[in-house]
Amino acid sequence: MIKVEALKKSFFLDKREISVLKGIDFLIEAGERIAICGESGTGKSTLLQIIGSLDKPTSGRISFSGVDIFSRSEKELAKWRNLSLGFVFQFHHLLPEFSALENVMTPALINYMSISEAKKMATRLLEKVGLAERLKHKPGELSGGEQQRVALARALIMRPKAVLADEPTGNLDAGTSDEIVNLLMECNQEDNTTLLLVTHSQRLAAQMDRTIFIENGLITEA
Image (cartoon, rainbow, N blue to C red; front, side, top):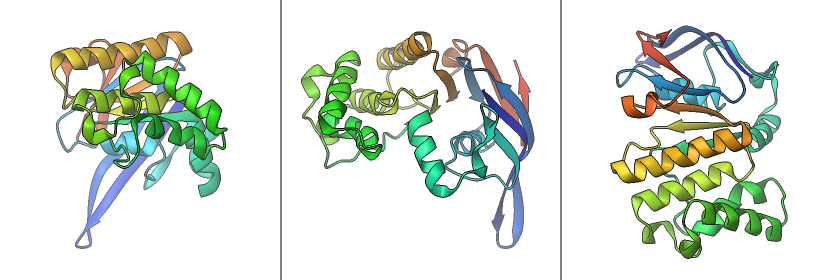
């Protein structure tokens, strides 16, 4: 489903080139659960953002179902990203002025779904993640774990082919972390959704099918 070929990414600081990713190749099958691990600063989040088309590589190719994602125009890429990918970050990136329900509805409304249908789907997802009584609460009125569950529901509303998560349990206590992981696993099992998770947690990584380690801009697998 996802093929990464000869992927490189460099940044420039005071005209000095800093190579973060130095030629990465790997394949992820549909429905696989992959953990990306490594020390801080090794390029894990950079790799995830490029796979999610939120950033562009210096060189190399990423294809989903045989199509190079960066061959699309910016408009086509934005539409494809909204339909095909769900994102969950360590910091929730919820819109503070919107309720939990409105935050979850947003991707569907951007994709021209009717308000009534988006509301129905968002309500169902929030009920599934245990927030039936929090639909009208704004992010500032929710705990960190509740905010992360809203973010997860938002990531799932378009029934994406893949969920990309960057430290999804990094700021959560053990109990809440387990709840988030269980919800991700349910999504994987029920809809064959591919999971690609950046994590420092060996406990979380152990629950995935494979672990990809990044070191010195290159990868090894376990």
